[in-house]
Each structure stands twice: as structure tokens, then as C-alpha cells.
Image 1 (cartoon, helix red, strand yellow):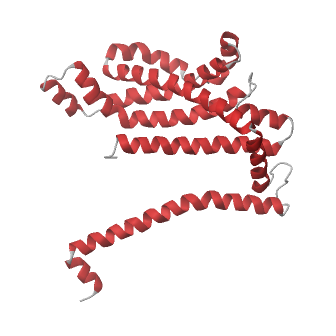
Image 2 (cartoon, rainbow, N blue to C red):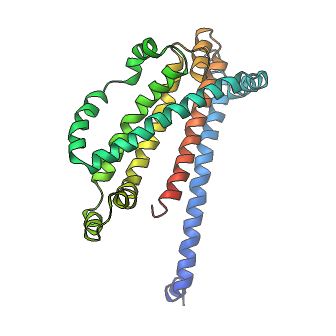
Image 3 (cartoon, rainbow, N blue to C red):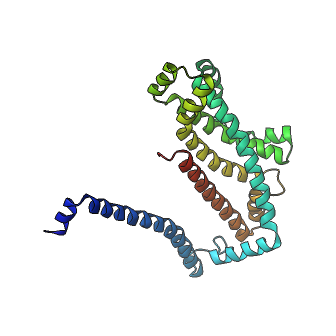
Amino acid sequence: MTQSGKLAQDPVRVERAEWKRQQTKARLQQLLTVVSPVFLLVLWEVLSRTGVMDIRFFPPPTAILHTFWELLVSGAIAEHVGVSLYRIALGFLAGVIPGIIIGLMMGLFTPIRHFVSPLVMALMPIPTLALLPIIIILFGIGDLSKVITIAGSVFFPVVINTAAGVLNIDKIYLDVANNYGASKSQFFFKIALPGALPVMLEGIQMGQAIALLTIVAAEMMGATSGIGYLIWTSYKAFLLQNMFVGLIMISFFGYLFSLLLRGLQKKLLPWR
């Protein structure tokens, strides 16, 4: 009997072979996620060292790494990163928490949805950064204006996704809750919140990316510290290695926050 015939007659061996294939596929995918950025850095290094790319504008990654080490030892990196993360954390929470609450209320209560939706639809297309001069006039150039700018950018994707998550809950769950006489608090915590969670987390994931984009732009205007300030002042002084350090730091934190939110999503939504 052939090997394939033996496998066909032994379900355990078939399942084990399939599991091995899935493990091999998963390891290959993990390897590719590491290889792609390494390949890009190596290619960048080679093109810079061989003169194909102008090192005045695209310094090699090894030179950028050396500059990063100098800034790290001097304490400049810790100062700028600490300030930016502080602003991002406060602005993110200030946008996410009201976004979740209002989004849930919009999904649960039709009058609230009809009242709030026009306001959300009217304000959402306006870039928060376009309002930054007004925000600075009202709240100054300190941390508060940066926090409010980030919160405004994060709020809209979270509120829209949360409301959509509630509205997309399968009607059968609503009928079960009504038939068993679920209280408002039980309906909120047992049906509405878990049902909206998958779409809500997508909005939060989008919000964290927007928060990083916003903080860089906000710190380029009316700031004396932060990663965005480092990028902008380095550009104006033509210290491009310092500028690339700031850009890479933003990229790193974007990837890190994305991994953390995906890990949270796996914990909260294991069935997905």
C-alpha cells in the first residue's frame, strides 16, 4: 500500500501531517516578516555605500544606527520619546474612551444615533491638524494642545466603528436577551459590548496609527520637544541622520503598538 493510502486509512496520521504542514507554514510566515525589513535595510546599506543613493539625503543605516547611539547616550532620545509617548497615551485615552461610550450609545439608542450622526459626519472630514492653529490659540503650545489634537483624530474612527459594531450584532442575540428579560446593564455588558468588540478594536487599531501620525505633525508646530520636534528641527538644520532616527522611532512604536493591540485582540476575542 502506498504512503498516501496509509495516511488515508489513519485519521490520526492525517491530522498530524496537516498539523505539521500548518506549523511549517506558520514558521515560514514568521520568517518572512523578519526577512523583509532586514532585506530592505541591507539593500539600503549597499546602495548607499556604492553611491547609487546619495548619502547626503539617504545616509546608510549603519550611520543612522551610530547617530541613534550617540543620541541615546546623550539622553536626547529618552527626552523626546518620553514626551511623545506621554502625549500619545493621554490623547489616545482621551479620544478612545469617549469614542467607545458615544459609539455604544449611538448603536443602542436610535434617538441618540440620529442626533449625533450628523455632527460626526460633518466634523469627521475636517482634518484635526487643520484645526491645530485654533487649538494652539485656545490651549497654548504646551502638552494640552497636543493631547486635544490627538484625541480629536482618534475619536472619530473609534466612535464610528463602535456604533457599527453594535448595529451589526446578530438579531438573534437581541431576541434572546429580550426573551429572558435581561436588564439594561446585562444587555450592555453581555450583549452590546462583546458584540461590538471585534469592530471596535479595529477602530482602536486605526486610532493608534492616526495618533502616531498626528503627534509628529502636532510637534512640528509650536513644540520644543518630542519626536516630531526632533524630525523637524533636524530637517531644518540638514541633520538628516538625526531626522531618520526620529522617523525610525515612529515606525518602531507604530509596529510595537500594533503588536500590543493584536495581542489584546487575541486575548479578548480568542474565537477570532
